[in-house]
Image 1 (tube, rainbow, N blue to C red):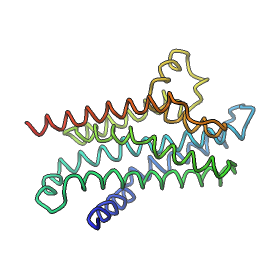
Image 2 (cartoon, rainbow, N blue to C red; image 1 turned 180 degrees about the vertical axis):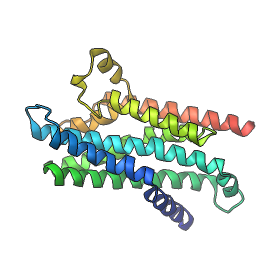
Image 3 (tube, one colour; image 1 turned 45 degrees about the vertical axis):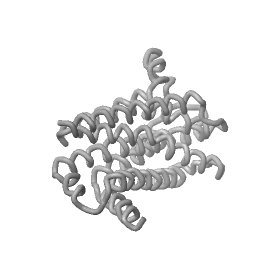
Image 4 (spheres, rainbow, N blue to C red; image 1 turned 135 degrees about the horizontal axis):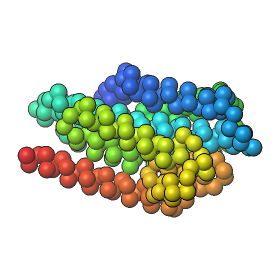
Length: 245
């Protein structure tokens, strides 16, 4: 248990010291939130709802980016440097090493959620009930698991620069098409229809439903669960193929 706790602590410290995480997952979402709720005039009638809606968009954007990019690129770098091979000759078991990464990354997600929620409160005075704050936080934390699985899938790549390019491209495409940067109503009809089946849209949609006094839809949960299964199967298959080689 002590080994597991230390592994989690190390993972958390490594992420917090990573400038990539600080810029893309903390600074950028908060700057975007300030610009699109304080500077840009969106002419949206219900300003309070828009401020809460966009706060959830930026929080999901932050967590999704951290799961896809930070985790995936770090795993590729560790394998390229021979770190994972070195781990195999230590008393640290692979399962503890892997679970430490998952739990450490989830703790970072919780930290990101807290920081961005506080930023929303300080910048715009976003007012939600305690129940809504907690439910939004829990939803974002739980629904980020498929993106952690996607991060491990990217982590199976051989080259760090390739993984960085693909993960950043994938992250941006999912964020834009999932309605995290702009309301879905502002997008073309075809893009709205496609977004209904994307993990990013269903990730954000659950939080958007909560701030409107509803629960996340079953469709949100089923779509995210399907992507989780898909990413896990692909990740396991690729890693077994690599072990054979």
